[in-house]
Length: 461
View (cartoon, rainbow, N blue to C red):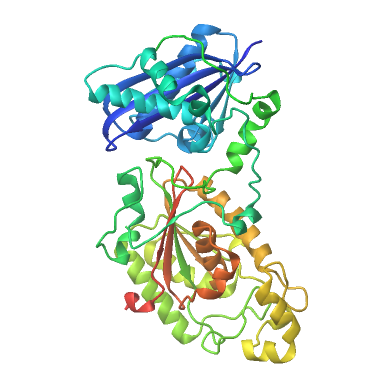
């Protein structure tokens, strides 16, 4: 059986706006480019253009050999996850396109893999050529692509585009190494849906965050080939890449993000004394002040009316805070073990000064090394980051396109923010979160994230 690689992309200048797609079919054994297709499709969204690119690539591959095994590579996580069956398809414009794509080949002959944009340059170039042609009132032709190769040199046209899948380590702990970028601005997360690049600064208040053509031709082979090993592991890598930020700025996938509204629990008797209070301590309840803060948070969130699910850490203070919100919103509370606070070992219940006095060497090491544990075998920040990243990936996949309230603790919230920003672990020591404060992180299908920090209970009054 022959094996083909289909690389596809689509773009829209305006979203919706003038749009086009590009796709290329590659022989998986030799790395030879067998066919190209590109077309200007008029006014459409980015995602519709991407699906049109997928359709063109699959049709072209089918025309070459309907019995072939096809491995699709795209930089759109939305298309990859939906066509792999892991994400539901809700948008009315994309349902028929996805259904059509699923009927070109038998399902067992096609696999899907997400790749970074830098590895999809060939299809991206074709999509842009198609849009450029449309701007001139023309349609793309293979001659235009040939001219592009002549002007750049075949080596430049394929530079950095290798067809060997990049086996990046997507273990959650790697998030500590600063993978990817995310926005840190006052922009509402929804603004990223309005364009392909960075969202423009917005004057909205913090509360708003809660609310196949072408011709066949030969081309020089790329520098590398796709092996059957890459094909066999493609779906695994794609699944692990869900909600993992990609390096640099990529075109926005125009699906609704999974938005996590992060609510820190209200005060306990230990909070105003600034004592270590993790998951290995006395598990205190909310104080009178903390219960009042939880009620005010519930009122504020009920006013916004955007929360669709509530998930809480298993500790008493978070369950009590979540219960106050749930009573107001009429929603059930789901308990998630991954949202619990860090275990601070022998430091539980002590102030920072008391720890420095009793365990000076351990404290110094802990402040300098994210893999260091508190005295007595507590949990390191690296361990916490691994747990939170795994929880993030699980919840993002389960609640794509939904707004979810996560009622949790200081360290988990800081870690969600740190991972979204790709910031170093020492950034945890440079954040401060008030009791019952609210933050939000929106995770988009292309792996990018938009972060909003409110960090002030005054907005709840």
